[in-house]
Structures are given as C-alpha cells and as structure tokens.
Length: 357
Image 1 (cartoon, rainbow, N blue to C red):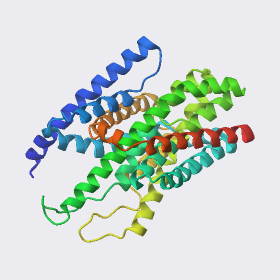
Image 2 (tube, rainbow, N blue to C red; image 1 turned 90 degrees about the vertical axis):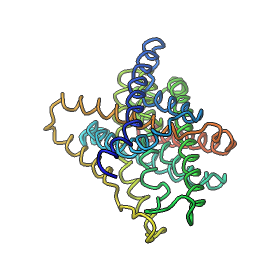
Image 3 (tube, helix red, strand yellow; image 1 turned 30 degrees about the vertical axis):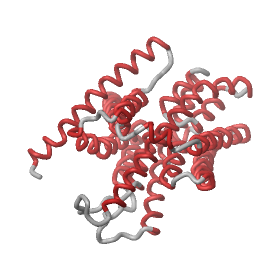
Image 4 (tube, helix red, strand yellow; image 1 turned 135 degrees about the horizontal axis):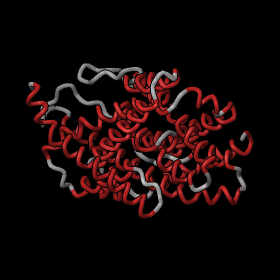
C-alpha cells in the first residue's frame, strides 16, 4: 500500500477519533462545571466509544484509523505522560511512601491474578484487570494489551488455515479489554465517594489520606477527584503517589513481556515480542528528562495537554471495541474479581499507611 492509499485508509478513523476527543473534552468540562465533580475526558471518551461499539454503528471505513490510534497514538501519549513526573518527586515520598506503593502494586497484581485463576476468569481478562487495578486504570490496561495481547499472524488469508482460531483470539481479546476497562471505571468511580468518607471514619491525617488514595485508586482523574474532596494537602500527596505508581508500569510490562517470550517462543508465522516495549523505554526516558529540570514550564504544560488529548483519543478508539452485551454475558465472575482486586489495593495500602505512614 502506497503512502497516499495508507493515508486515505487512516483518515476516516483518525477524523472520528479527533471529533470524539473534542466532544469528550467539552462534555467533561460541562459536567465538571455543572456538577462540581471532576470527570476525566478519558472516561467520557471511553463511554462514548463503548456506546458506539455496543450499538455496532462504527463505520467500517474507520476501523483502520481507530486501530492505528489504539496503538501509535496511545503509545505516544504514554511516553509524554512521563514528563509529568520527576525522580525528585518520587524521592520526596520517602522510603515509607515508596514502600507502601511498591507493596500495594505487587500484592494487587499478584493477588488479582491468583484470585482470577481461582474464579475461572479468562487469562487475558485477569491480566488486564490486575494491571489496571494495580497501576493506573485504562491507560495501563491499554499498554499491557499492546504488550501481551494476542499475537497477529504476519500473513494470513481470510478463511485460510488458522483463521477460525485467530477470530476466536480476537473475540477473547475484545472481551478481556472491554471487561477490564468497564471494571476500572466502575470501581474507580465508586472509590471517589467511598474513600473520602472512610478517611474521616478512620481518622487519617491529610498526608496519610493522600498517600492512601494515591496508592489504591485506579485512574489519575479518579485520584484527583477523591483526594480533592479531602483537602489540597491530600490532593498534592495523592497526585505524587499516583504518578509514582505509573512509573511501575514500565517494569511491569517489561516483566510480562519477558515472561511471555520465555513461555511462548517465537514461531515463524508469528511476530516477535520485544523484551522491553519501546514506548516503555520512551516513558522512562521522559521521566529522566523531566528530572533534569532543563525543560521550561511552558513546554511541560504543552506536553501534558498533548498527552491528555492523545490518551483521550486512544480511549475512544479502545471503547469502540467494547460490546456491553458481551460484557453482560460474561456473568458475575469478572465483577467479583474487580471487587476483590479493589479491596486488595485499598486494604494493603491502608495497612501500609497505618504502619509506615
């Protein structure tokens, strides 16, 4: 396919994602202004995409551009996300804060995988849920999907050998992605109202509350909303703690990628999996660049805006692959897994805060 034909194939999907990004940003602002509750454009975009995907009204001509958005635009957004955090901010958390975060992420990820297996939840679903609940919600799930999703055949003719198996793998991947994205949205939204109330019941101070919320709630926007209901001091502590969790996305995806290489050796008819995804290295490089302090504030603000827009577009594109009817048909086991995973994250981080905070 020449360049002109490639651009023509991508254009409808990219245009749809662009319109959806603008609409999501506008709706987020309106809802936040009217209700006073912070609603992330990423969540709005995911809901819009899921509505379109579930109604099966997404134009067929948009599939190529939407697929490109879920891969390339998402990864670029994750790389720019690294510019939001410096190593100095992580150091400022102290060894206690870093320990709480590291232990919470580890226990949540491993515990979710074990519980998911015991419940009989599909392998990809429990992997995506474990990633989203332990790290940073939808963005982490999407990053893991790019690392550990089903490998695509290099060449495969429709109806040829293995086509049915590939179709089954695609369906499983779509179900896993849709289920995990829905779960982080449901339980993260619930945490916005539950955790600030529990802070007052337990009697945590602002710093402890911020660390607890930042170490346990799924999405960055959900962390901001929950901690903001406590105090500005809690909000500052929660934001840094949350971004420190995001850094752990890099070693987590790299580790899963290396394990996958070990247990699924490359075959001639399958694509090779990089030991460490390039976008993960780019994310770490962005953190290091931010840590030098050489970048002007205006550039950092601009990079954050571009990153948010890219991630919003990617969430919409991912959402179009969600079919809520298939999600409902999966039954209550994934829902139970999400509840248990959220409980592990909240419980382990609370114990850590009370013991070390």
